[in-house]
Each structure stands twice: as structure tokens, then as C-alpha cells.
Image (cartoon, rainbow, N blue to C red; front, side, top):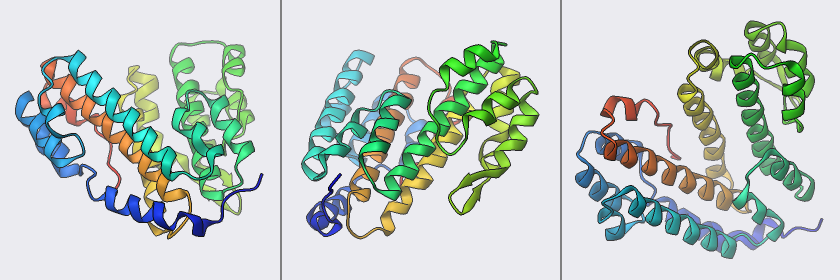
Length: 266
């Protein structure tokens, strides 16, 4: 498939670098977690792209409407900047099949790597969920259809042997000419998911890992990568606002909210 040269993205990347300055930082989220709901909304509204419409949200329905509109506006903005339209499906990924389709359609190393890591995150979570539920291996084999960097056989061959064997295999995952040690990032969270049936730590550690991958786009001067990285960073920001504010509306303790926060794009 013919794609646009990276130099065609000079204007788009310049625009993205300006927009990145308005992303909400870790400190703002940490401060907001300690405030009452109204003050937290005002702080987040001022720190980001949301304005008074976010600050005025008083119910979960109003919050969802604001954040839904923000996400819709973000997608439209990114479509204007993302000149390779074959990448637009990345803005609507709902399954590993969607991810695999983009892998086939767009020959970009950064994008390929990110999507394959996304597939790995999805497959790891599926594996652990089924292991925690004591499902049979046949159920696992039906639900893991696509591969990222982790071969399907790694999941299948370690399932009956238990979590320790799986964690051991995750130390040596091949990524072209290098080795990824996924256990370094996820071992404690994986053990908690299976032993305590709690996936909050896993979701946080996976989000942290993916954000660290996106941050590498800051070193890419031209091309679609910074545009996509900004989109995923803003999507993550919207999810964190939802997590924080809904938690406050439901009177969840600040420390319980904060422990679910992943890092933001910096």
C-alpha cells in the first residue's frame, strides 16, 4: 500500500506539538484526586482542553456527555491531521481483529510495534482472566486468535502448567533482533490478578507500559507517529478523568482512586 511520505506531516506534527502542551500532567491528576468533586472538575477543566463545560458537570450522565463529545471532537481533529486514511481504523479499535487488520494495511514499524504490543496486552489479560476462572484450555484457544509478539503457543503450552511457567516464558519474548522481558513489567500484577481476582493493578501496569511506548514518538520529527501518539494520549487522559470524577461522585476514597491511575504521556 502506498503511503504518504513522512515530510507531508510537517504541519500536522507542528500542530500536535502545540496540542501536547495542554495535556493534563500527573501532578494535576494527583492534586485533583485529593479535592472534592467540584474543585477537581474545575482543576481538570483549567488544566486541559475541556473548559467550563467539564467544570459544570454535576452528574455521571453529564460527565459522560462531556467526555463523549470530547472524544468525538478529538477523533475528527486527528482525522484531519492523519493523512494516511488507512490508519483511521486505529481510532476505533474494539478488538484484536481490528488491530490485526491495521497490521496488514499499513507498513510502518512504530505503528506495527505498538499494535502488536496492544494485542499482547489483550491476550495476557484474556489468559489471566480465564486462568483465574479455571476455564479449560479449549476456551483459551478460542479466545486467543491473533498474535502480537507473544506466540499463541506460549499461552497454550503454559496454561496447564500454571502461572509460574507462563511468567517464565514472558522473560524471553522475541521482538525482531531483541528480547522483551514482559515479566519485568507485569509479574506482580499478574500474580494479583490470578490470586486475588483483581485486575486493577494489571490494567494500570499495562497502561503505563503502553504510554512509555507512545512517549518515544516525541523523538520522531515527521510522520504519522506523533499524531497517533497524541490521539492515544488524549484518549487515556479522557479515561483517567472519567475514572477520577466517577470515583468521587461515588464517594470512593482518594487513595483507592489514585491506585488505579496510570502514568500520562510526557
